[in-house]
Image (cartoon, rainbow, N blue to C red; front, top):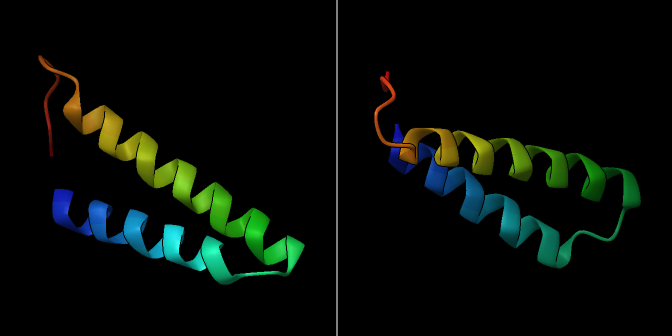
Length: 50
């Protein structure tokens, strides 16, 4: 699962480099933040990971 999250993060970062539409950028930024939060949650020690 971690690899999928990291791949999504990389893809969203690439999209932000080229996307010029403000609405699309906002959506991709939100998705990026969500994936980064997932990665942070998985990195916290002592918590059960799926």
